[in-house]
Length: 349
Image 1: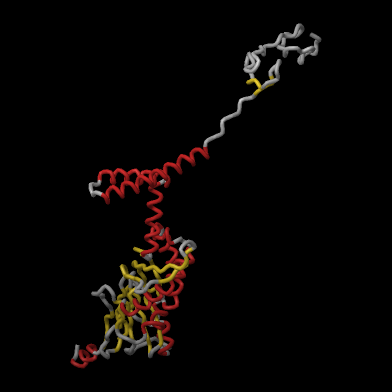
Image 2 (image 1 turned 30 degrees about the vertical axis):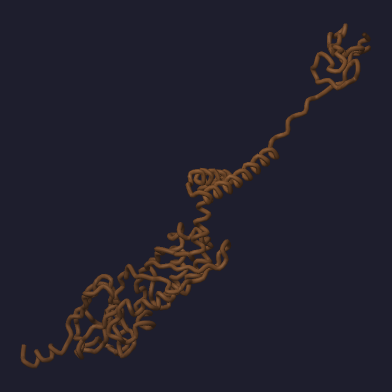
């Protein structure tokens, strides 16, 4: 190779590739240092990458992962822009951008200020929440047009603020639309995260991004709501509130009796005893009010003096007359004393 050929080859680009040494680079512009791309140059696009050629500010050809030898056959848009009628023979200039399409993981979101939600039981409730999410570049062309611009490098930090603010601003509406009560939020983090993912994903498509996952790690409720939840839990553990009150009063009497604090202890014991007595009286009255009524004994008039006699009695408690009657002479059924006809067969006695 002559001296002039070496100078010309040193001013041309024959290999175009990019290896990412970081974990958060989204777009990298290939630095050609003013060199032109030679005919038949080798382009290597690795997995989770997309190479985009830009000619004079206009997006041209896009290359998916693979190895390419640049020619008019695989550069149709560039060929049309450059008006290569018979294929390009001389070097050309173009900007090459490598877009990282991998999934960016473990990105954190959180509410810097409480967000409001309307709960059917507690009304308006302020809550805080935080978690993680992941996303990727889904449409490199849209992303370059809408977000990237003409910078040389873009990292995750360049879009992270926009994503976080979008999540937080929509969080109150998402919780309201999910119709999960405030008391049940802690038990439905997974369902809430999936609901939020479906609601938030369309908002990022216009930026060429795709929200891959959304995880709710914690939702903290106001202190008064948490106290109400604790009281409900305690009531559920106690069960029968009346029996629990009786037990508490009995414990208070025992503690007062064991207290050696003198008059103060005696006063406390006396007060507890009075309270216990009132409580037991109320319990007994309630028991009497709720006791089932005893059935009344049926009576029949005495056959002699007509005084009331318990059914089935053999003698009247007033006159002592026997209550046993005779039997029918025809059917043998028992008859009341003095009966002239049988009530069963009607025979005359």
